[in-house]
Image (tube, rainbow, N blue to C red; front, side, top):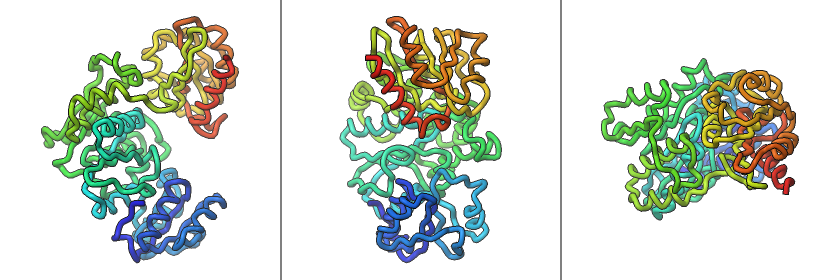
Amino acid sequence: MIVASAWSGKRYAVLGLARSGLATVAALASAGAHVVAWDTDPAARERAAAIDGVIIHDLADLRLDGAAGLVVSPGVPLNTHPLVAAARAAGVPVIGDIELFAEARADLPPHKVVGITGTNGKSTTTALIKHLCDTAGLPTLMGGNIGLPILGAEPLPDGGVYVLELSSYQIDLTQSLDCDVAVLLNITPDHLDRYDGFDGYAASKARLFAMQSATHDAVIGIGDAPSAAIARSLSARGEHLTKIAPGVCMDQRGWPSLQGPHNAQNALAAIAVAQALGIAEVDIDRGLASFRGLPHRMEQIGSVGGVAYVDDSKATNPESAAPALAAYPRVHWIVGGRAKGDDLDACAPSFGHVVKVYTIGEAGPRFATVLAPHMPVEQAGTLAAAVASAASQAKPGEVVLLSPACASFDQFRDYEERGAAFRAAVEALT
């Protein structure tokens, strides 16, 4: 695991003991820190208690004075949680596992760190950058908001590259991560319940660059006003700043898992990172062609009777659903779930691609009303019913697309379970 000598003898409180929290307490304890931890899940507390040096304690009764840090899960709302307020009142840093990784970097073999953020596209771009590094033979580890918990991994050898997907929540919990290459793909409204409006959310993304050394590389998509403003603020970096403009025409025919205009932007960002890392053009070309994408992100899971079935369950807001609609000319669109807003305006430019829409979940009735003036609508209610109905109506050459533009929590545990249910329904057709 990754540990820092600087943690030895210090006292830390850890709130949240899921995968990253469990890796955090193990790493801190291994380094000789004094660790108290808590989770509302008894099974999680039991797993943490089995680690030598970890004490399970109801943190609501804990005195935080003198602690080196309160380490919290990114899911903890910093603007409302009482323990966070108590830590701040006591002058205790509120941090996450990415900040602990930043503190451990001095103890690691020489390496580079790539940090990727953005409202949409960051998982695909992170995985693509890792794949390009793998193709070039660089020792590489993918972590952060994707892959294994970063502190639970074995350190990379000399010359390794840590590729980190970073949500705004994780950036909020990080103070000193100086990325060798930092990437911002886009900023669109999301998670606004955690911020003081959209400007607060955009400011969180900008902090990734504020933590950087001025001579390190920044790659920024400038297709939206907040991202473009961040790029302008970094103009003094000169050759260390790469701007990715929207609408660049690229030949994507040789990249089977990178279709659609949004993936052109993702690919351009990944190419810029690879070039900053010194990866040869031949390896970049081979990597783009051999990349296989990620589950639940425009993943074609089958074809039945000439109809393709595409799982884009990770599209949990309209902005992330829009690219999938744009990528296919004739779509039977399954949309709905727990909405993050009342409109689908971001998808409107591709409404002409939709043969018919099938609404599901809590947002189904509302979305049916919104979409009825533009296309045929069926209120299917459930995902299984939507797949069955779409399969009975779709014609060869068309696509049945699950791109729900909503969170999954009304009917499923998470977007992965929703995608698995879609796959099961498609498999049942055969």
